[in-house]
Image (cartoon, rainbow, N blue to C red; front, side):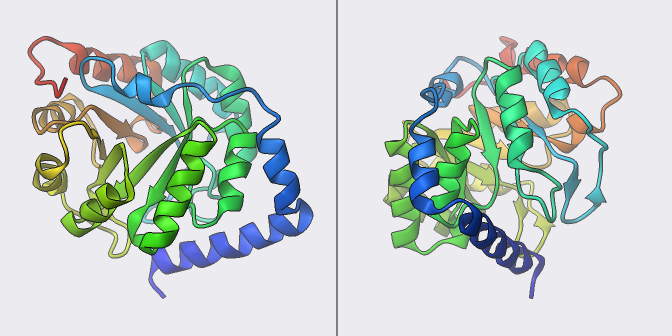
Length: 268
């Protein structure tokens, strides 16, 4: 199996285990017992090219990249630096994340929080909402069209924002057909683990004008952010560079300033 297939298989196993502990009916009720989600879409629609700062300890390609004992402390630094949204990895096998990390981050910050995982089942959506998610990703290539549309509808029915993740123009067409309002173009194809830095520039111009466009992977510095902004990005996801930076808050602040600078091209 490919690494991507292994990840999905692990997610299926982990979801089955958690559902055996807390049945679907119970997690569904719990997801509706918490405070309403924060408005991630409004955060993304602000002027300039925003920063989604992601907390992750590991990647499938490199293994552990950062020792993060207290993710809430890192989230506070990201928010202080001006990040519009905080992403938190919750997949445990390849990214060393957890839903407990998500809950801790949500309590620590006032900006919207995204649960970064591989969502394949409605159970995960209600689970993410219960633990504090305001935004949830869907990887188009991991889902058939009916499941993609069903999960997207469920996310929005709970008041959250769906980040629909694509790698190819075909993925993008399926995302739009499903009704995606926010599309993330990932430069890394998780099926092959290869990088295609031109993916965003190839795909984003073909999206409907009203679509919020997010660039994912490969954003290391201000130059990368400017390139994505010039191609129409409303926001960029930055993870590895931030969690390995000596001064994460300073780097976020720098990237945010570049995204807001009058000389930086903007989609809105």
